[in-house]
Amino acid sequence: MTRLMPGEGRCHRLHIRFPAPLTPVRMMRPNEPSTGIPNTRWTDYGSPNPTDWWSVNFGQVRPVSDIRIYFYNDNRGVKSPASYELQYLEANGQWQDIPNQNRQPATPVGNDLNRITFPTISTQSLRIIVTPQAGAWAGFSEFESWRPE
Image (cartoon, rainbow, N blue to C red; front, side):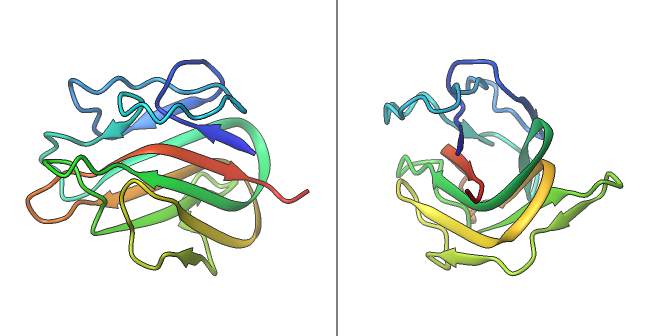
């Protein structure tokens, strides 16, 4: 498992379309336990875009079959997204939706586990594209990438 959180540490490269000005963009070290502290989060707060994205580059090709996301909801301006897309980077440099995703729950929920399983793919990078709810922004506090054993 690789746990990627907008917390402290240096382990992978992050790429962000819209970093909110007051949101720290750092990452938790792999296998470090979650503290549940809400300041370890990424949001697109203040973004004028209809969608925003966050991606991670593992630095090498890795097998992945299970993603776990905890969308952030502060019950004010940041809420779980209306929808999201989970993509992987192909060897040719093109982003593609991960095929055959099984999402639990089907609709994104805030401050709880959103788990996406799929047949194993091999990729160096993953990306999540969020579409915020009307009148709100989107964010998450934890992103975990699991591989088959």
